[in-house]
Structure formats: C-alpha cells, structure tokens
Image 1 (cartoon, rainbow, N blue to C red):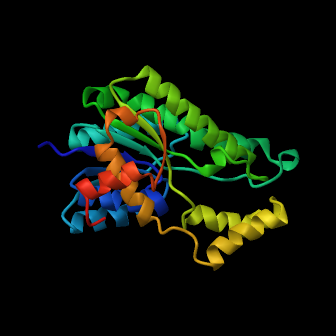
Image 2 (cartoon, rainbow, N blue to C red):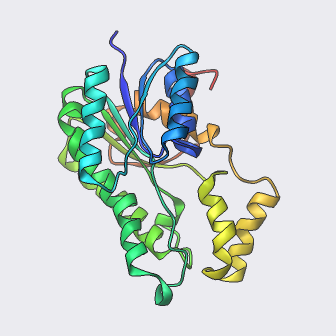
Length: 260
C-alpha cells in the first residue's frame, strides 16, 4: 500500500509536533511546517531516527506563496498529499476590543483563518485525487466567548463555519473541525504571561488554575486522536465539529492504533 502523506502546520511544538510523531509511527510520510527552522529540523531527525519519513518546510501560513511551496515540496519529496492538518495558530492580541491593536487582530485572522483557506486551496487538487482528509484545529473559544480573546474567538468561529462550507462544496474530501481541549502548550503560556493585562481577573485566574492544578492535557493525548482522524476519518464525518474525546474517534483509535 502506498504510504499516505500528511502536511501538518504549527508542527514545531505542542499539538502539531505531537501529532506528527504519532502519524509517523502509523506509517505516514510527514511534512512539518512552522516558522521555527531549528525545532522542525530536530523533529525531522527524531522521526527519521525512529524509522519514519519526514521533511521540514519552514514558512508562514499567512503567506500565499508559502502555502503553495508547502504543497509543492510535499509533492516533490513524496509524490502525493493525502491529508492536511491546520494546527498553526496564534491567540494574540489578548486585550478587550476597545484596546485591541487592529494590526495584530488582522494578523490573527490571517494565521487562524486565511492561512487554512489558502493551504487547503493549494492542496485541494491532490486531496480530491486521493479522497483525502482536512482537519482544521478549532477551539472551545469558537463557541464560548472569552473576554479579551476577540480575535481568536472570531477566527476560530469563522473556521468552524468555513469547514461546513468546505464540506458542502467538496464532496471528494473529508473535512472536519477538531476540538483538542485545553492543552499544555505555548499558547497557554502566553495566556498566563500576558492575560493579566487583557482579560478580566477571574478569567485569567481560571487559566492559572488549569496549570497549577495539572488540568492541562498533554499534547500527545489529543495529538493521537488528531493523527488517527487525518489518516482514517470516514467520509460521513465530513462537516462535523468533533472533540478529541468523541467516542467515535476513540473507537477509531482503538481500531487502528491501540498503543497511542
């Protein structure tokens, strides 16, 4: 069987990196993308040393030319693209709407919403050819307002509805939005470090408690579910918003990857 090729953005750390490691263990070719060249190189070496196949394609998903180059490099090295995981994201600006910097707000939309659209558009011919899968990483903030996170909330809410339109238009691919839960990642560090000045005190204290009380999920937990979805999600799930602990995903995990 021909190995599937998975493009993962935001793959330098956190959820993206964890997903890449699991997908590689499952036999997929991995194309890692992020802006951090050094971390990507380390992850590629880790995957190759474990017997997997991976390349790094550094770049910024908010740039159209970088999205096209990402797909082109995947085709050059592996000859196909079967899945795209849009995991790159930013939470800033953390500020009330009355004080939010419009330029940073715009950059948030470019990374969290426009970036996935541009990468999907670039990869669609390949994805349609192979009846591929698109997994867009969303957030509970898309449906539950968090004061101080207006850009992030709006972008992720837009991503949810964008995915529904994508699923309605492109019947040859399976497009899912994925809720990873509250994960122990760099984004949580940003909330703890910068949230005090941009969020209500009780909201900021809530995120501090998540960390202090050990309630944040290790990235490997939802990352395993995300990897399985990118390789095996059935077509009838297209258009759905799925939390990482959805029983259907867990059943799929047991079916294909009992060890992860």
